[in-house]
Amino acid sequence: MRLQVLMLYQDDPKKCTAAKMIRFGLAQSVKKIGNKGMVLDPFSERFLLPRDKNSISSIVGVDCSWNLAEQAFSKRFNGIRRKLPPLLAGNPVNYSKLNKLTTIEAVSASLFILGFAQQGMDLLDKFKWGHTFYELNQNLLHDYTNAKKEGDIESILNDYDLMRLV
Image (cartoon, rainbow, N blue to C red; front, side, top):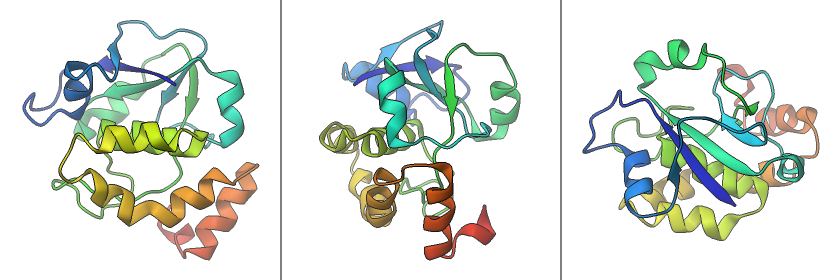
């Protein structure tokens, strides 16, 4: 799957996982998002589902500060907007916080959900804490990969007692 990053340059460049993805040639930096690009938008009303794989040409991570995320995502981006189902952060800054993912965690999770698990693991391998993210979310990612519709996500959240946190 083709990976792209829209850089907003709001974070510490030394800690920026999106910049590292670009440096390692794992993703392409873009200024515009195509109509078939799937934008990872934490404020979208629709969850990412495995069936979305058939209607997208790329995964686009928007790299911005969590403190400015609402403002950043209020802008009109082209593309198909989807939010990830709840996941725990494995990065040292937001460790075990629900949905406070780095760009690399978000992109990796989307790859798992869409059926590109090896590509998702390859991204996580670039960070010493990458496997922590996977270990924290392994069961959830497996279950999300099998979701057929939005209602399945709600059932999974109930099974893990996460519905009250969403």
